[in-house]
Length: 106
Image (cartoon, rainbow, N blue to C red; front, side):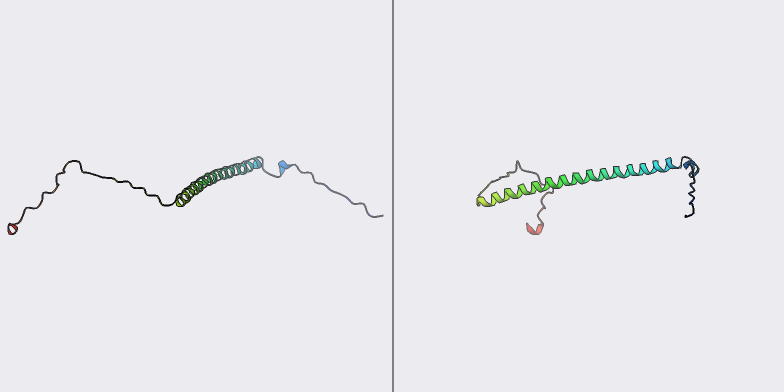
């Protein structure tokens, strides 16, 4: 017959292991850090979403412009002439008077 085994259990309360209130401060700090990180990640994802939206809009505009250029290129040459005539209104006075003729030129 084998010898009887003895099992010894030590019962210790958690209060005796750590100073009171130690867990609360540490957990609150960890939770605050996690909340800040989550908020930063949300801000970053919003910014990325805005950039993607702008890029998508820009690519749509670019494709529309390319389609319009293709349509214009397939239509053949068109002659569009516009004439603009600018006529001065009244005679302006010169800011600097013309030079007086020299005696040798007279």
